[in-house]
Image (cartoon, rainbow, N blue to C red; front, side):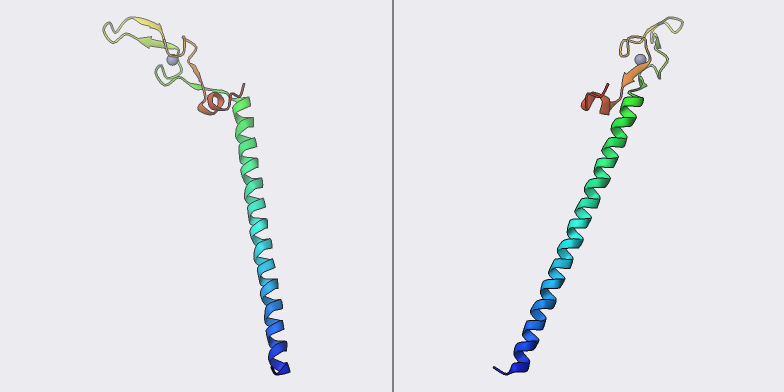
Length: 98
Ligand SMILES: [Zn+2]
């Protein structure tokens, strides 16, 4: 085999190895950056749940009272929120954040 062909093949292998290493480094950095972003988003959401664990009750719109459908002048406590007008947020219930 001629010497110039051997040298060219060896150079191609070195370049291909460097390209593969660069691609791996880029992929590793991307995965790490995405993991860091995901962790930050989850931490921010948990902080939000800890600070504001409740939302308005949908049935009474946060008033804690519900008007009777039969007698429009009568009002009672909302049975869904026990008259507080508050319901735990979905994340607070799922992640058990208090
Ligand atoms: Zn309610």
